[in-house]
Length: 282
Ligand SMILES: [Ca+2]
Ligand SMILES: [Ca+2]
Ligand SMILES: [Ca+2]
Ligand SMILES: [Ca+2]
Image (cartoon, rainbow, N blue to C red):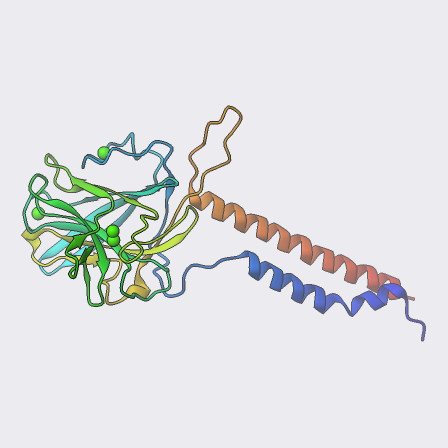
């Protein structure tokens, strides 16, 4: 039986499809396993850093798409909104919660899963604002094995406070924070770069509502934390002006190009197959 050259190509079809799938699987990076897929925040590039004064000015957080959440406490529900930006140096987070009482027992914290692996080990990062808007203070935190505590060395009695935060005295539900992406304090802080993904959860106490609660999950369930995806800058345009970029657009652009590539590869394989079949027809 005569074997046409085109027909020989047919035997490579499964190999082409297999290589296509393997190649595309390398291109696509899925969310961290176990983290809450409904709590993924795409940070926005901060061309101008916000003023961390406790007042969430719509102009300074304008490019950010806020995410809304609710925390159930023993005596009620705290609703809130979180905003995240970053530049090459810092992460900036603003949170507005439904707390109208400026009390010493209040706090608003962000705790992190540094490695975004769904588990916690000593040294994972966190920070928060504790107390009233005028008498309270920002604290840099770290996971010390049981819960998050202030960045402090009990042997040397040194504090390692990196970043800052403020609470609004006129509207005590508003908090703003900044924290270095990589402070160098690797024992108590994360070390991140633009484009990285980090697990997070929000912890809030409104003293009026008793013991506080977490969103999306407590530190006992880091596998259910949310994710923050840090923004990356666009290359400077002509004239050196950087354009703010939403990380979700980068991810979506990557996905659409992957999808386009998949379609192209499948069409190429199908074309080879159809051509081979035509060539093998009598
Ligand atoms: Ca502000
Ligand atoms: Ca309160
Ligand atoms: Ca620190
Ligand atoms: Ca820390």
